[in-house]
Image (tube, rainbow, N blue to C red; front, side, top):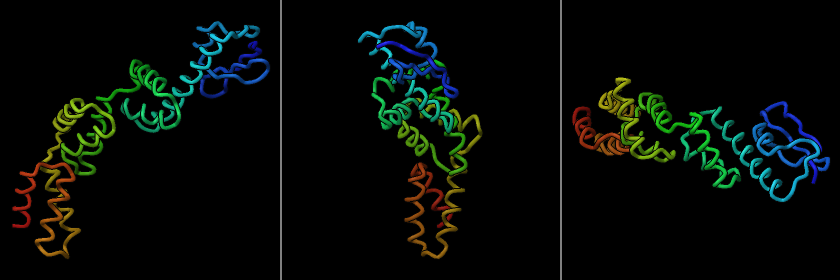
Length: 208
């Protein structure tokens, strides 16, 4: 197998490697340099295998960057999405590790941003925020610290969010009897991640 051409892609920054006159793989310019590729180079089995591995990593990185262009994602969630799209787990791990090193994937920053944008807008308590972050692949300790720090720094008071969530839900249940309101409101606030003791106090204030 002979490399017959190297073609710069107009978008994506990749280099399309032509072998024996046909497309073989697309890799980064750095991969081309590292492998010493140029027109006329013969590909033995080892070089061809290395080129294919680098091509898969380049493809996975391209997909990852596209995902991150839509929204920030924690590393574990990004790996999960890459593997769902058919990329090998070790390739996905390697790509995400490299993106971490470049500062493009930062779980703590993601957790802080998530807390900042979801706490007040959706009236979520600390426990729900932490649970959602863990579900998205953020480490438990990182999630807890990010939620605590962000609520404090942004002056977001969970107790106030609890009262606002309760008042809003009560307006939706205006036609129900008091017993049904109490039962449904308690379940709703628990799902929102507020402490049960504080919920009981709010129920007492609002429903007697």
